[in-house]
Image (cartoon, rainbow, N blue to C red; front, side, top):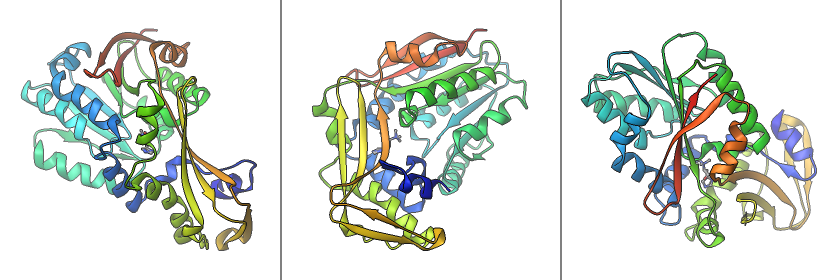
Length: 310
Ligand code: AVJ
């Protein structure tokens, strides 16, 4: 069990993939609208102002049916910019959004059906590694969208392994359209992970509420705080839950208690930031080559077009 393992480890940790229950989905949706959270806005600008450039960079043939697969699709706000133009230009494709939250996927499917009745949608519920197994089932050309710097939640070694596995399951000329937040100063990054309204704090602490509800925990949420740090040289933001006192927490379903000392931290998320050198490192030996790159005007965020070459 992940929670048992993470809370028994030293230092303690919990996986960020558990953020996204119904409450977590709603909080993340609020985060995306926060003034401090520049990430979503920067990428949305690329999708809104450079939509045709994206389509050109993907080198799609309007008459060849393809699959547009999105890993961690969320509310699809950015993708809809692309869908609108693909639909208008009569490209033939199926949209296959994948998300860890069924709630998010159901809402997305409804809104796609309303906004784009002509677009075929085939939702997939699961984590990123789940989709890898299904890719080889079809032989259509594929475009994989991995947006929002979602890849940044993976430590580099895991990201590298994931991209290599993705590459191994794609065919020559298939595309990976990868969105990454760029390395920038702590002044800009840190507030994005410790906003003034405390939305990110609520998002982080919701992990404990979720353990209380789903595993019979008795976390006293008020006895924990949120903490974010940014390692500027490395380009990595890290989030923690901090214990405000010495305390013991019982998790009924694990039939176990866990001890927290004052100031003790649970690592909950890493959000890596990138530059071209790091992207090169991550796609090394994956068979992908960088064949294009787009950025927003503020140079906060980039979308890399990666083409499977061998
Ligand atoms: C959705 C993983 C890209 O790491 O920036 C936002 C999640 N965590 N605020 C990120 C998140 C805290 C976000 N990603």
